[in-house]
Amino acid sequence: MSVDKSRNISVIVAGGSYAGAAVAKKLAGLSQKGYPGLVVTLVDQSTHYFHAVGFPKALVSERFADKCFLPFSAFFDPSSKHQFVHGKLERVVDDHHIEVSGQNETLYFDYLVIATGGKAPGPINVVGPTKEAAIEEISALRSALETGSTTLVVGGGPVGVEVAGFIAAKYKSNKVTLVHGGNRLLPPNFCDLVGNAAQTKLESLGVRVVLNEHVEIPGDFAYASHIGQSALQGASGTEYSSDVQILAVGFRVYSEFLAPLEEQLGQKLRVENNKGFIRVRPTLQIDSDQLPHIFVAGDATSLPMSTKYGFKAEMQGGTVAGNIKRLIDAGADSTAGMHGERATSSLAKWVDYMDATLVPIGPRLGVAQMVKIPLGNTFLGDLLVANLKAKDFMIWLRRGYFPYH
Image (cartoon, rainbow, N blue to C red; front, side, top):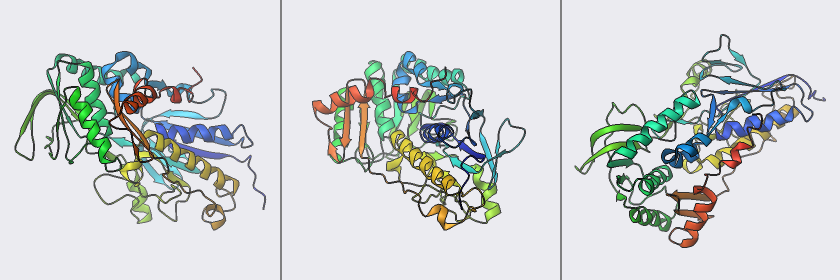
């Protein structure tokens, strides 16, 4: 049976960061390539895309912070049917409708992509609903760093290392302490040489690095950073006093919107812990036989933490877009039916084959790991990271998504 590719197809992408933007842009392009009835709706709780990877530099540079925000109004061709909806995904009402804050009616979808990402704690997750509000958040923290004399960074993963490095390099009189629960910096997917080199380079900037220590976070810390004199207690009994506290630990995702759908299906779609990760199959479909048309990409997935990087989220977005196209070509949203094996057997599986990570430590230092090859304690590592990432955190790669200014 032939499939009418000109039929009306609604795709909703919830979340416009790395994974969501990649999916939405790729699928929107199909409407000019033989799929005229395909309409993509991008939903995000902010008016602007935030280049979260660039947060460490945005924190110390007002000019760069401004560049990290790109308007979603410039994402789609204004002459197309595609649209951006400013609002927060509140509920997946059923298997074909979502509820978005600020919208009077539910939104219908043939395909849904959940790319809602992570949420605080974690300093890169600014929460302002507009560029102006988000810039104000970052500016308040920057001002506190400029006037304060001590800063505590909790968490020695890539974000914590980068934040501590940029603060120490910019504000020489601000004494930075980085506390990490592991026996070396950076996650297990980094080799020991790279983690140890990160510590050496931070210490060369004056950062005090404390390992094998867990800090108790007060319940009244409303967000990923706290401005004001505070003394946090370590498990060792040591008290860490500082003027500014930045948390780069406790990663979790926002997925409460799935509760109504879980109740209807009588099935748990999320990992049973307090982090909210959504179960996915290798094809990045949500892990349910009843929902082959719902995909998840980026930080919200139940994939290992080693996959929670911006460039890997974009790669997942490419896989999801390709799989949705395969389902459309197979007629999975039409008379062919949503549950046929014909529609799902040809889907691609996402494979985490890219092992390349750059971690700037201030504007001139850094560590890198390329396909298990460490570039941690060499001049080459500094040169590579400074030029490939620290200079502009690859913001130029994202500007191409927003050509309609």
